[in-house]
Length: 245
Image (tube, rainbow, N blue to C red; front, side, top):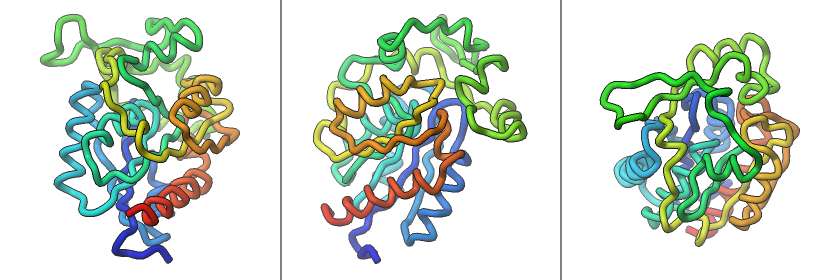
């Protein structure tokens, strides 16, 4: 068993249109394997602000080494936060964005093919928004093929109903100058039928980061449809983090 003194705390960072419960099955498997797991409530308000908040969360709620796990937009958040917290030992990207300096999520998506937000999202003003900013909700039509591939009809309905929106400004914000993957080992779980982030883009980002890649025949929510396989990647990364600590 991994040394309980040096094993990392696993901190999970969910992405847009969902919450920490999407990692429920993965979290249970990690906990049963003896790891301390924390699930960060990602605000989904601004890339820089969300990353700063995660860094503060790590400094106040963890001790010792930390392994960060990010899904989708959460990948951009963990990359920035890891650069600010020296105790982070590794990064696990799950169907995630891995930007480099100056890239936004929209930039990355458009690099794989034109994206028209008006065909994907309902756009809702929110209190205190900067001029022109809106919250994004996935429309019902594209929800299953873009986001919920592989889920039962019941789960699709549940995830659609409880969407946590992300701001348009967050997906358009440029990434920070320094990214954690530039100096830390990383792992990438790629969904081969992901309707949100094309496989070619996932693999390109993972290669740039030097990530160890695991491909699963899954859509965007691989942690929901394949919790065992995702947990196994995290456990392998956590064991490496314990050795580095």
